[in-house]
Image (cartoon, rainbow, N blue to C red; front, side, top):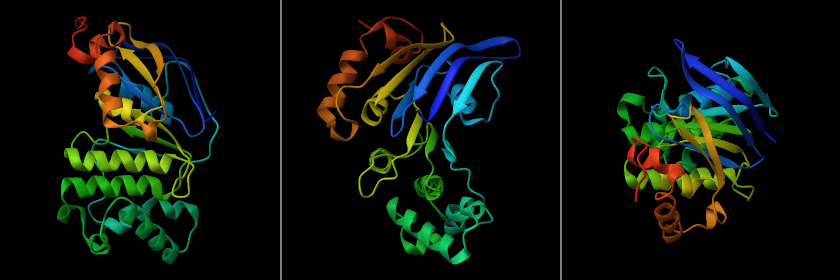
Length: 251
């Protein structure tokens, strides 16, 4: 077990957003938080990552290092792409040369060219900036990665490539780091493709209404498998708020 959320509750300005949320994240597992806008997905992620203290409940962590990938790249504009990727490595007390080497390795993993490392964020496309953000998170070899809708703003082709990268790096194969991931998305197809389990949140119920395993191994699911699972699940009451955003049952 890498992470445990026990009876988490939270509110903003007196309005309850989450109540009684329980969730476990196992070693090497990716759990997707899915639900409509305003259901508390990002709030729960931020509580899990320690960015917000919950009003109620407890967070238990059994790891040394985590990283985050946000919807916006959040790069430092005065640093080059390579320096942004290497930024978190400074806390590991590594020599500058070794930090540059690690940054170069992870830049290649996300599809950046060596020449891109000397460019500043303003010189990069939106997709390239997000690649840098992913590389920065993975460069520190975290045991847990928190993803807050990281691929929403990129084009379909790059989204697919970055999803593949996350699955490969989360695995324990030769090129993997074996990290666990908590992944916020409003895209059911993305959740089914990436995750081992889904935690389904409801704005009406103010929390997690169901935790569901995704059939098959995540790396082995083809496009047809994902399509059929999404088609089947999108007709269920548990996903009604996610599918149409208003909680109506989808026939």
